[in-house]
Length: 178
Image (cartoon, rainbow, N blue to C red; front, side):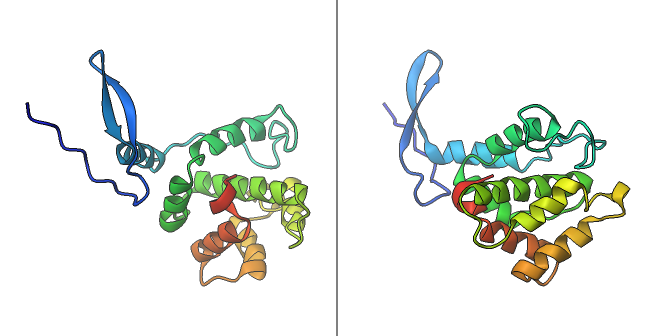
């Protein structure tokens, strides 16, 4: 009987086999297949933040267990649960529309919030305070460009995307997620 070949892993550390049910029998699935599936589904455009929801919206309700911010944070934490996915995101993302801008602000806010709970020695709370006030929202005469320039003062960067990448590294997004 001929044995099926295991697919080659795309991640060096992803060589452990994971049991998988197939047609009533247990078979082996290489964990790289799992990561391939996670990565391909993660980078498909998944718009989950309502275009009418901003930091200035009454329903946003940052810091509380009810409200849009809390609901979107749960989705975001699930999306970036796996470190490999976070690494690919940082390497490949680009902000192209309003949804990407809101998602990036939420990622950064969640990481800063965690930093605050752990002492925030780098002064990130100032950025979070401005976000919560809605200072970077269009309806408050703010913009994503202004948000990027505030971050650029802290981390540097050649352009907005480079500044976002540097910020994500500085606030330990890769190590801990949002």
